[in-house]
Length: 433
Image 1 (cartoon, rainbow, N blue to C red):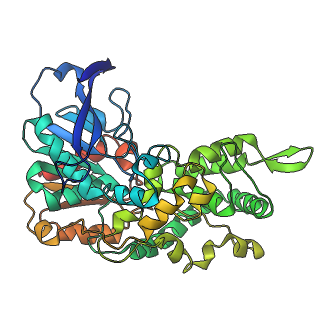
Image 2 (cartoon, rainbow, N blue to C red):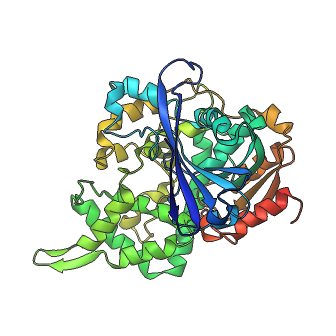
C-alpha cells in the first residue's frame, strides 16, 4: 500500500514494486524496488508528466531530499518526479555483507550481482513505468552512473523515454575498464596539483600523514585499517565542487600531541572512517568496474593494474624524495576488501566478479545512431570522474543529442549548480537555449 506524507512544499508517496531478479526469466525469482514519488504541494491533484531520476554511483540510493532542495525544485515546476532506489541500493532489496549470504557462497553471490548492472536497471524501469505513468513515456534525468544507465535505456528501450537528460558525462560505448582508468589517472593528478596550488601547506601535511601511516598500524574506531593507500583514496573528494576545501580542513586537524607522542587525532580518524567506509554503499565497490564490462575480457582489478603505469602515485617513492604525495580518485582496489570491515566478507565475491568473462554489451551503437528521443547532456570540462573526450565521442554517436560543455561546475553540478543545470538541459532539448 502506498503511503503519502508531506514535507515543506511537497507531497511524498512511498512506492513499492516487484520485478524479476532476472528479466530473461520473468516467471522466476523476484526482488522488491522502492521509489519516492514527489510532487509540488500546489500541484498534487493535477495530471503532470513524469520525470524519472536515476542516481549516480553505482550503488547509491536516490537522494533523500527535504522539500525542494537542489534541482528538485526546478523539476517540480512542471513534473511529478520518481526518485528510484536502483536495485540493490537504499530500500530496494539491498545487497550488503549482511544480506548477500542469503544467496549462498561467493560464487552464488557473484552470479547474483552480475544482474545488478545498467541493463537490469533499465528493464526494472520499464517494468514499473506502466504502473507509474499508465504506459506513457517519461523524461529520464540521469546523473553520472545514472546517465550511463540513460544511454543504456536509449539502447534497449527508447520507446519508454520522452526526453533524455544526462549530467556528469556520458560513458564510452567501447572502452574497456583499462582504457577508462588510463584516462583517469592523469585527470586525478591534475586535480591534486590544483589542490596543492590552492593549499600549498597541504603538501607537507599529506607527507607527514603518509609517513606516519607507513610506520604505524592504524585501525580506525570502526575497524577500518588506515593504510597509506587508503589515505590517498581520500582524493575522491577532489571531484566535487567543495571537495578541495573539505580535504584541506580534514588534513589540518590530522595530528594531536599525546603522552606517547604525535598521533592521528580522534577528530581526523572519525572523519576519515566516514569518508572511507563502504558500509552504506558496498555495491559501489563490488560492481564499480563491472559497469565497464561489455565483452569476454575480465575487468581484473583494472584500476589497480593501471595504477602501476603511473609510479608518481607511489607514496613511498614520493616520501623517499621531495615529491608531493598524490591522492587518488574514483577507483576501487582489491586491498579495500581487506581494510574495510564492511567489505571483508565479500572479498572472494569481488574476486569472482573481477574475473568474470561473460559480460553482455550495455549499449547499441546502431540504435543510438538512429536515436529519435530528444536528448541533452552536460559535460563538465574539468570533471575528475568521467573523461570529457569519452563523453564527447559518445555524444557525437547519439543522433540528435545536444551537448553542453562547461567548466563552471564540477561533477556534482546538478546539485551545486541547481537549478541552472537542469534549466539549461531542458532549454537545449526544447531549442530555447
